[in-house]
Length: 616
Image (cartoon, rainbow, N blue to C red; front, side):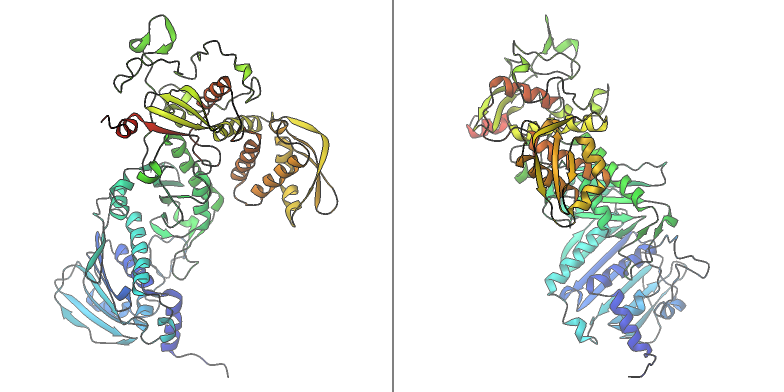
């Protein structure tokens, strides 16, 4: 075929394929126009999953009557002009493609009244063919109806999903916009049935309640933006006890624009590392704020992705903000909270002269109520007070190295906010069950501690503290071990050799795809030797090969070392060892989970016991 210029009709339909992929794309473009018009209420109705009808009604500024036909011309927009650099964009839509693209593949009817006019006007574009402009009575704002979507493009129509599937996409997209813009009241009705409604109060908790329900809203943790910082983040994140099996509950925005970003999603996931088990994901509404000229929104036809000038900085801001909130609020896991969706942290009883037992400076009176008027003790008060041992020689518990330092946490500071260490209840060890779980009691009920997860947390924080202080120790192997590496893994070793050596690994290249392991981190010395040391190193390298920030893969490396250095399930512990492990766990910064996110401790409350024994 000879080279030729395509007709306006065909080129418009091709352009529509880039911007308008399915009914949800239409709803997104129209709703974003409503948001740019300053709307505080947006009502969406769909029929047949949007393929039959989409209606969007808003109370925004409206469009002047004489500009309605112009709004359907390609590249016509009120949001940028010739002086714009297409970088510092403060609006959600600016390309000037949405309305003409939609009108080229559907019948579009619009009725609008501008705030400065006494009457409105209506205009119809039927599959790219303009109609007449007519006067119409209407309230301030815009009503736009889209019907017969893709009727003139059968190839695209047949690739649409069922009505229910397309409706699901619309609902998820509109829910995301409602979370990003809590000041706007959104509603969605499908085939005459209401599917979504938010109140538009401006409170993000109210928006979460409208989208996910009040029970979930009650378990969200607040992210507060630093108003003085050029780069900041606000929003909500879920408590670790509230999680999902996929990433669809993570909503991101940048400067008010709802986006999809693998990089920022990964930043949130890495912030939860150690708080959530593998393949579990949080609920999050993360609203990132950056200077406008640091974001390029002109990189995707549907404007769902952006490019950051300083992406690493934004990644760091997001990860640290989320991690900080989690570190301050992670609660003790209550038995059954995975089903019921909630758990409450237990705060220590404040130490004061009124609740000390006379003559015993290391004990306190029991909390009032709850059937513990004869609480036997002993239990820990604070990290700065002596721990009663009742004659127990802690050196008899070979769970950690003697004198090993424990990472200090924010709970050490007076009057600081409650941290996971503060929320860990005071405990008295009863015994061991199935050579796996330590059984203890506390003011709130009975507690089960996973001995491997608990020791893993203790070891991780000790190893990390030594790593951060450049004080890690290495133990030579009596017989060096040879490790065969997968293709490309030797490159990973070269990239991270400094940190591997710093934590205590001594390795040498042996041939083109093998290593000789001559020494291991000291914490592994009694549990990894010979081929076992090689297997541990391979696991560590697998962690490193997953990528991520330098900080995140360092934590994964240290967590893997801690895992292989810790006591196992099925290992008998003496009563003294159980007590010593609990005391060490109480001193850690994040005692409620192991480094991989599994709970170290679960609670069976007094209320649960009373219900089961029919005492209530």
